[in-house]
Amino acid sequence: MKFYIMNGAGNRFGVFDARDDADFVMHETLAVSTSAKNGPMGALGADQIIVMRKPKNPDADIFMEIWNAQGFEVDACGNASRCIPWLIMVEQGQDKIVLETNAGLLYTERKGETQISVDMGKPRLEWDEIPLDEYMDTHIVDVKVGPIDDPVLCNPGAVSMGNPHCVFFVDDVDATAVDKIGPMIEFHPLFPQQVNVGFAEIRNAANGEAEIRLRVWERGAGLTQACGTGACAALVAAHRQKRIGRSANVIMDGGVLHIEWRESDDHVIKTGPVAFESELVYNNGRFSA
Image 1 (spheres, rainbow, N blue to C red):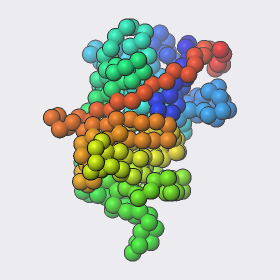
Image 2 (cartoon, rainbow, N blue to C red):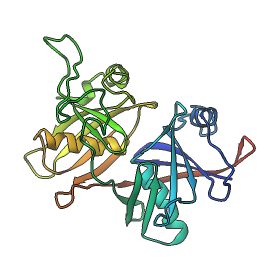
Image 3 (cartoon, rainbow, N blue to C red):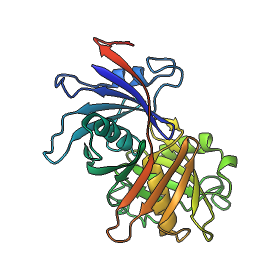
Image 4 (cartoon, rainbow, N blue to C red):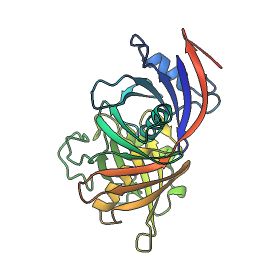
């Protein structure tokens, strides 16, 4: 079986091509060992493991199964939703691909040699869609970090882009202790499915193209170089709190994504880079070049 190593804006994936092997079953142990640092993917390891399968929906070109580094299957991964369509576009000579995930269909389009645009659909904003443990207005949720009367961080927005996100707005994201605060919020009881935690700094909100400097603590992966759904969630949360317009360049440690929350249909459009690193072969539990 072919195994690809790819990244989207530095967010790294291992991809099993199981289209011709219906009997291949991904499981927790394999996902964890494949994504481990200094494992088959080298020193950096992987943030997510992807399994490509034949689509279940007749309108789709490919099905994408997503596993995080802790060995749990999840429903969405924004950066992989560019990488997998790019593989199929190159293979089939197409510029548009319909990607199927557990969260639904995603419509993707090639915008350059290694630039892919993805229609991520409408953000889910109701408390039980994210989900939260109790009813709450999700544009600002009651989560605080630090003393109750003088919190270090407060008033985050909650958004689901097929996976749950909690987005805090900070003055200086690079001075924020993401690696300490992130795991505290990831397991906060308000989020029964755990949560991805974004830390967003708004730049140029009133002058030209707005920018969001973003770092994301991903559930099951920790601090990553980039998070595609996190970039979408940050733009949506910022607009709902009237901090920004409906589009921005989102600057993450690994690269830049352009995000637009389209007014005409409420869909979030994400555009960004794809990088193909290498190809291996997986056979009976072993990886080889």
